[in-house]
Image (cartoon, rainbow, N blue to C red; front, side, top):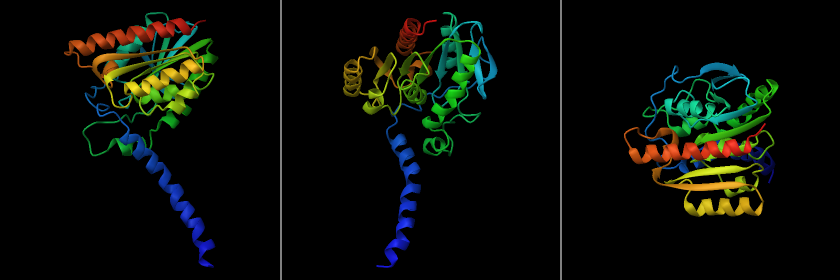
Length: 267
């Protein structure tokens, strides 16, 4: 009997140490099967904007700095140098927003087709950390006189933006084919939210989206949920330029995203 008190702390410690790894494994197993497809060719000089430091992070910025409305775009696992992502930022900026796309991975985006698995990468680049890193970026935008901030996130970034939507830090949110978002997450959302999903996405199947819609409506949170036919998870930012169906659907989603942000991110 004397051995039980001695062993008990070690048992608790072993259980505690196993939790982060289990969490990462669960995240990896719940990824859409299309999540890592068609990785972009990163280009640090792409886009009409420039790179500045905001809130301690290198950030691609586009649009007029004197705008009082800003949009935070949160990338997928491939990071802020993806050309399609910067093209979206420039498109949103042309509507009068100051758009910021931070490097939440500190120069270490996921690289496909290497010995480093997505599970290993997520151990140091989880969405909880992304959420915390977004806070000083938002604070810096407010310090420069921006009155209203919205956020849109792609895949990994959709989970970060879901966390932001549970706070008063932003005015509106858009999730584009988000990863790891649960009904419990949606129950805590406080701001108008749009969810733009792919038909071919096991991460956000129609039944789950129906549950999201029901919860948001019951909680009287303004919402817009749309499923785009014949496209896969990741299509809005990693579409193949030669795939006419995906390009058309991506442009439609970008238009829907911009409409939502323009409607709810006001001065």
